[in-house]
Image (tube, rainbow, N blue to C red; front, side, top):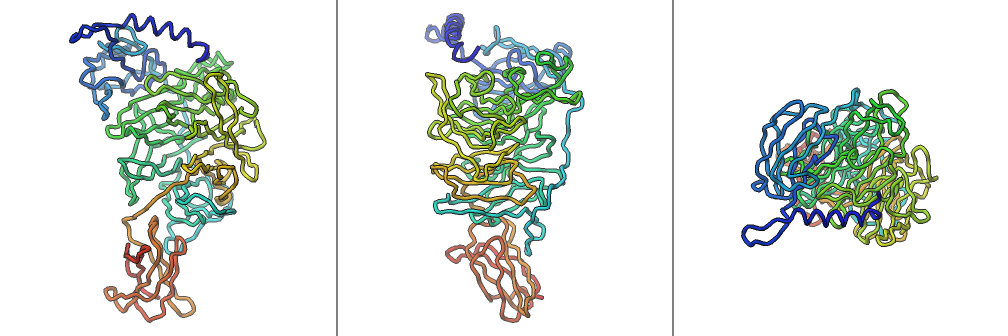
Length: 593
């Protein structure tokens, strides 16, 4: 039953429920409903982790009372309640894990949504045999890399800016190239495509995705997902760096899972939204597969950054039917059916969630308090009638724009291909007529088709910044869709999402400098990985390490700035100055050749 067609029935059910749950408030004698509590995993959940905690949301920990937990096979599970940092819930942490496949019963004196008398049960998933593990993917192509005299350890993909027009948004560009020649990892560029900061990942096989500026503790921070990958799935965690590029936080998934590569979003609640993939056993006979098959269960978790506890957990297996998928069953025996492929989790204007299912061609609005699906947009069970041109397929990066439109990156490449080119699509929703109409669309000037990845960032000035996923391209478009900036990574690279933002970096490591002799004169090349406030460089020279004086200067030219030292010197160093001439940092002295 669709959300709109079930409205009348839902009202009747709620009316009965309110009447049944009214109780007398002891102090006033007034009839009031008890405070409802939502549990994750909730009543009848069928794919919980064996290492799950039981998250209870809606009341402070002190009001939750006694919680009794038992497994059908493992018996009683003592544990402890750990409060969530917002004071609005707690997690019951069992002392021992559950057994795969068993039914777990939770007993309490609470009013729990979907439960009877505060008691409910959920089922623990059985892990699929032969679940994939991270692999080291070989570099593709022979794309150019940047070779830096002062930092030979930073061998990153080359970047070309094909177009830069007036009106381009000020700020930095954030990419995380991978799979090409050179080092994989986060990199910051300026509007000329010049390198500002690079962070090669180690060991081999590690990748970064979703690299951007967010806020943590009221301050701007750099964030990305980091880990290993295998066929579109990730096994890793979120990373947070401060403005000095010091790691301040790593955010793993909860309940024994590893975070997937598709989303690492910090929220104003002091939490992070993560996507998780879990390979579990499942009966696929309803869609023509084997009874003893397996699936990728797509999971969205909200993690309390202060405690690491799970405050919300949502599973595709509990809310999206196998028959909603547009993806074919796997041909390889034993392979897991990736029927939904969650690839983004965003926050709607009312605080609820917007989730994207690539393989169901659908967007899901999910109640952040209860986990229930409020409506579907697109797919086989859409609650909205899609107008001309509004259909989309294999989409990524669903967001709510400030004007109320829903934006997404419509890959349109599967197989099958549903369009000749990928696009950014904006849709206007009418919740009275239950229709969705095209509010705008953007294609790359080269009309490219991105068979994977991609995203569209809605900038505060109304511009759109687009990363073209498996195509190593990024663009900025004005309000009218006109291309203001067009750039590309070296051939062989791809990039999950591209972002733009303002960033001030103050690295703690000193500047780097290298001295060479060219045409009989000493040339000092200076750089400072991640420093954004350097306006000029000074070359210092002298007969001893402790006797260096200014000998030359030059305006910053990019990541590296060369300066020619005319006077005789045994030692040289580089000094970074800001726009007012204040000293920001000085390199270690190096011997002049």
